[in-house]
Amino acid sequence: MADKLTVIREVTTNVWTFSRPFARFGLVPIGGRSTAVKMSNGGVWVLASTALNPETKAKIDELGPVQYIIGADAVHHLFLGEFKKAYPTAKLIAPEAAIARADKTLVFDGVWGRDAPDTAYGFEEDVKACYFSGFKNKDVAFFHPASKTMIQADLLFNLPCTEQYSKTGSSGAVPLVGGFGPASWLHGKFAAAMGADKAAMKRDAQTVAAWDFDRIIPCHGDVIETGGKQAWLAAYKVYMDPAA
Image 1 (cartoon, rainbow, N blue to C red):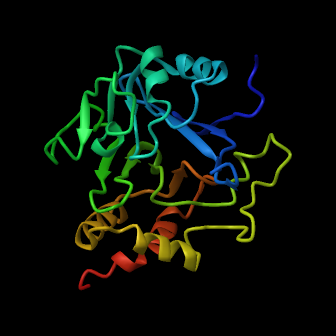
Image 2: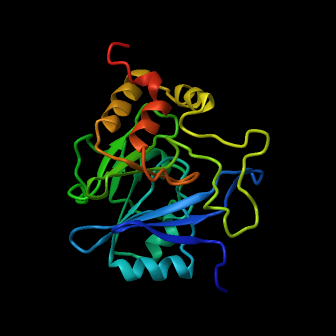
């Protein structure tokens, strides 16, 4: 059966998004999104955070051979198994916290939080990574320098998730709140509350701030097409003071 809800879009050259409706606890619309990057060697790097339906798979296969399947944090692990089944030769890499919750039959080729911090997995020429060891969800932020794009899961939300709900007839607005964007006071509170290790958060938030990106592709909410650096600085201002 054809999927009628996934929005497949080339956000910029060699970067594709696969956006779908998703409600947290079945009530709060936050949307879901996978992102595929065609690397300079012709292979494909995929942050796998939504189902691999036929339409998604057809587009990914069109881009090239999948070489990396990425789990972005502790809770974005549900679809790693189906991606690995479809692309058995691809390297599967995720944070240690995700592996603890994922399908126990999966064999991981790289583990953020278990491997040495300077471990290279082979995609670094095209995609940089920063593992947030101090973040409660153990997220990894990614940077595609060629398109000045940062890709991440739960570090930054940009709600409402208009694109992800665009084929449903719903606005995707969060009940009672409406929006949850990086410049909101609520996001600042969220960033502070999710920091289990403040020193590590300061280090990693500032590492990301030093990247030369303009766009942010979140898993939850609309893509920030421009002004992404300012959005990051606003969301993580609590960690931006070098003297703090």
